[in-house]
Image (tube, rainbow, N blue to C red; front, side):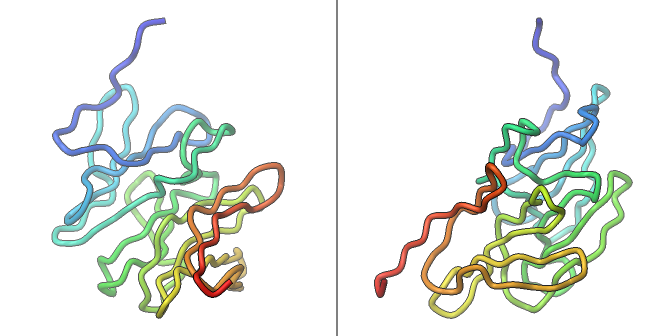
Length: 170
């Protein structure tokens, strides 16, 4: 088969995931300031979650053999971080039409959000002296999986959660 060009952009593409039905792809355009979330189908790409002078990011560290992407998009929506509303990278869930809602906000930066097979979201949260691995459930219950040291990247495989833990004290 011949490759198909889905999108053209001048920005670096970081992280992507396929829609649940495989007809669209979502990706992060840009690396640092003023990043945006793009949605593309065979007709091209337009930013769907783009706010001037803010950052939107999807996960780049959790490749999924299930989707061929990075666990950013399920039937529940596209999970990403945005600092648009609070100035901190908060967890949000977006839809293909560009609407979104903050899912978990507590004025701490969050990174690498991703869906679990059960519909929870795992993410890394910056805390004093640690990068805590946390999980938020659909009922808004928040659990700290590991709150010490550095815990990157959270990966889901075979029904389990795996991550690399680094801590000078353990």
